[in-house]
Image 1 (cartoon, rainbow, N blue to C red):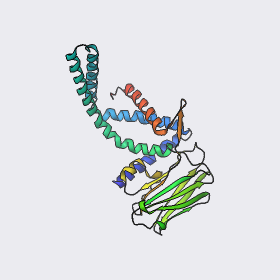
Image 2: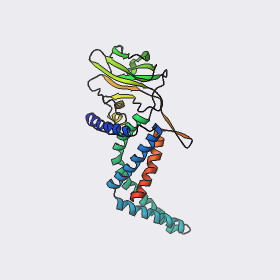
Image 3: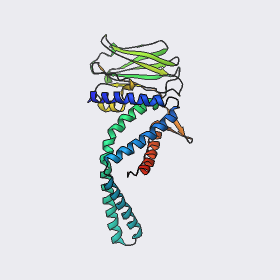
Length: 280
């Protein structure tokens, strides 16, 4: 499963790199708008292909008719109760018709969200701003053997070792703009490298580290920090450097990227369904 997910993420990474190359002139906010609109329209087109459109149209017509019947005959208990039962049954049928396509789209949706999150979910660290580097290793690994070496321009405090959870923590802070390399190692055979990104908030992407060897649901949502590295041969379980979350402001309302993404993509999807005549 892990190898399949890694292959899919590798292909998606190339596609998103090409897309972001086209959007490099825009600010992260406009990048989010464009990606959300494109994603919403594509998803509704795919929904139209994998769903039973005729059945959905008929059941929506039944829901509208039953709802109208409930309103018009609200003083007739027998007819009103019959219409409400019909409305309930139609609603259940609509839910069942919609759930199949939704489940089909859930996996690609999660995969794509992971790559959008890498590029728009966080901002780079500012010079002097601190972040926590958290490392989990396999049970039984000597935590004292887990070593961190950093390039010039990166201040490091730690480590703090927690034997109960097989975890090691460092506090890192870049001292200048740019990408500063760090290297995690266990002994002489197991090592991984990654760059700590620092720069203006308009910089994108700010790809954090999240590497895992066994948690395949985590691999779907966190595509290896964009690095494509594999930990299958190392005692590392997870390596995570959490960048500050980026916030977006639309019409004076500040929100996270996922909130803005969902709102914009849903609106774009609804507009696309009206434009292309797709029942959702």
